[in-house]
Length: 220
Image (cartoon, rainbow, N blue to C red; front, side, top):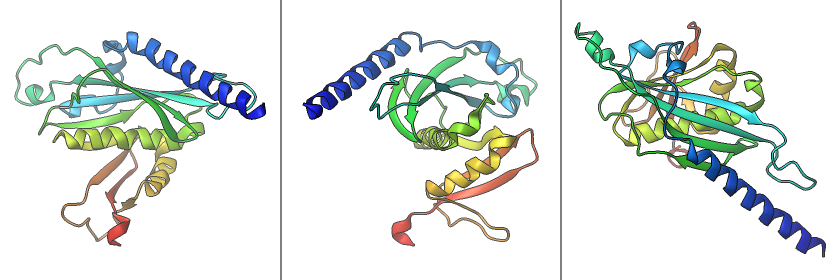
């Protein structure tokens, strides 16, 4: 009887998660341009992916729940027009659009919704920027995983990710988490092997910067 009850609870949890993913999808198409007004480094790149993360409190919080608590991340995309500014040309007006949403539990992805194809322009230089939010130190693993997922999606689209920008208080924790994702720090006086995927991690406010490369452990 207990096994049957446990299965029913798990089925209910899965259905509830599917419903909330669908509800969030309804309003995923457009994002406010206002959020880009205070985004650091936005004017230095051709495009930016701005990531906002927060905890979802008390969702599916019942005895025996295996996916409470949860974190949600929303990635919004905008072209900045920096390439025109550098040439002294008037910058066109670009819309801000939501690109993708992720749900995490205990650092593991459990849900994902994409509003459109990978929006980052091929061959153009951009940045992935994690916005500062209250209590972010509680879900550093999820933040690092989400940032790397977006980084790899952009890379697969032949886009140039010049930097991943994170709040200064999260710089060291996220740098540590990258090691768990097989990204090793490039030591002073050395460089990553040609062909390696490399990440430039930068703090906001500025002051900290490190470079990492992906290490395939099968080749080590």
